[in-house]
Length: 438
Image 1: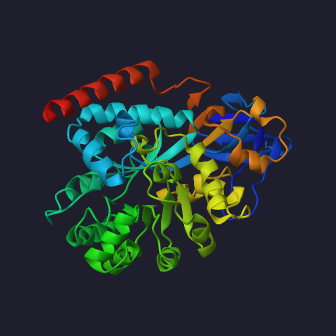
Image 2: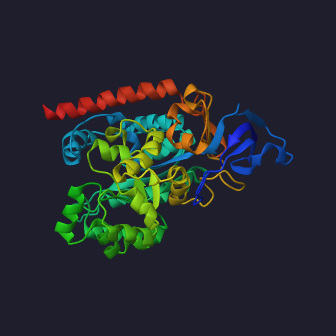
Image 3: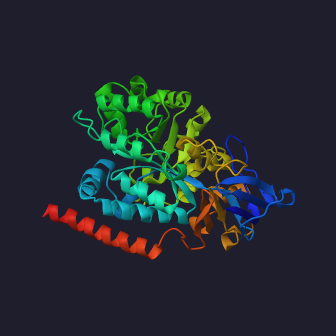
């Protein structure tokens, strides 16, 4: 399939640039799943498309990467509000999750993928249970994802590691390489040294990254010091886990030494500002991390602790939190924020040719309609990209060269059926959980 996207304003994206570049009157040419040209329409090579998409003046940009979430938790949306993290988990989440079924996880995965596509998310990084069901949802929808079975181990049985290994062997590089698999130990506090050592060895054997919650709360941080005499990052370093690619979610409670360690080791920090605020976990020192050279990517976390999968809210909040807490409006630029939402996450998933709109890169992109009143007048494109865009402004979402969302339509999903199944499975899930409490 050869696709031309024309009549667009284009940003090819950023990695380490200081400013976001924009190209007016641009065009993107796609052959199968790869971009062959992205630039001025007047300079485009000869190209005979099978389909032409008129962008109608929209902004074309790299698709967003939601780098930390628990997609099937869409069925648990909003439960346990106004509780501390430990109470939220033990009183609201865990009692319900015990009653999850394959059918519930598939329904929640389809719903979450539909929501993410609506908001321009083209790839996501997930840790959960019943992961065969989520992998099937990713495969069937056309989405791109890094998936891991969450590993919890309190008794040194390491039993939870087995389904994670099985997931790697079955799904890594599946679905035209749209699915990749991670090892996913939950956290320092929810695992034993024995299982983390096995995970370290498996990372070397299978060549996959490690996705783990790190220093999410002060309780996590203090508990690690009490248990190990080390902060969570120091403990991971001692175990040799930082020798491998690590995706560290949250990182709210970090010492200067922890930050320097993660920068030196090339750890990708997965920043989830809304979830951290809603659960009163704190504010991650992102400006300090960026200054130290850390890699920062953005995530929503699950909707039970966020309430939606709209990464644009995280994009706006990431720089604002740092400016407000540091009383310095110069920290965290639009370019750094856009990179956190796109290219940094794409690289962390494991793709060398994702997260930018350039020849040879995978055709994961979105069109943002800038014709609404809240864009008028457009005096500063960089600022508007971070502070003005709403998730509802996304008009089209493409993954791997295939349109998956287009002005309210989902070509690979039956939206009405997805919503119907999600409501039914959520109701049945809560009925099962409630029955055990009586």
